[in-house]
Image (cartoon, rainbow, N blue to C red; front, side, top):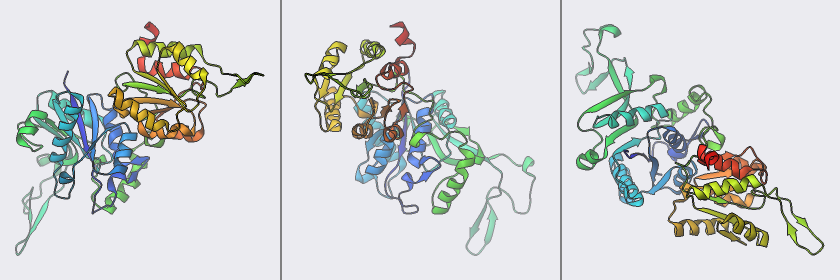
Length: 401
């Protein structure tokens, strides 16, 4: 199966529109919009954002992209997009021990790029083209001005004005998405070589943001062009839930996530909590599927360790900085945080939400936590929320296990 990698170059410096790649359009920053459409495309193996900016890195990571730090020498105004793509592709291959077959250059300054167009470019190269790009029908007469001679026609003779239907069809490069055979890009170090396929895009959606006026136009058009594609806090569409292909590990908070957040205390001071049998079944299925699992809890309570022993999964409890413990655990396991699903319910889970690619809130979570989550379960904590998460990830495998 071919490895198809989308690279979104998004450096921090922009003279025309300062902070451009983090500028909000519609429901999300530009970099988030690009990641969202790429992640929704069917033919992509992975999506990475190449950046030198911590804010862009955080937004890209939150949207579910893998982040690759771009070196300073290819982050200046004169650096080419091809240089960023080649560097990101090399880092991705080394990090994941795979060879990329097809690489896409996706520009987040084209805010209305669609997942269908991304798939169209990928499909063109997978089907035999060496390179591909998005284009849109263009019917205008192009003029060029030369010193001393005035204007002259570029795609027409100014003395002859044929009707649109009598002219050859001109196609405008949209600047949104380019696809290349990886080996050819390494050899040629340019996005166009060999046979180039043209992938038609909707001309009404073509817009490149190069100056503040373009940004204003994009914001005005977003309510019309986005339609029903708004997502929660800039995340992908609400009906997009994680599958096994998205997840390499599952980390679970305990109190309020695996319990209903109530504690019963007897006369001896012993504490009792209530858990859900269905959650145990879901965790067992995840374990059998080979997913690394961890319970991570602030509370240092024997009941947490006892529950972990019963479920046969590791536990870290009595942890003040859960995000630091989670980061260290990911490093020890060799797991990229953006491939981790973390389920929680309260504000002390928010630092972990910022670290992972799939922050999930249980249905009874605090409103702030629900707003920061990429997905929210229908079930409340302690009422089957973990089994619901397992069903997202495993699908039919859960019912067959």
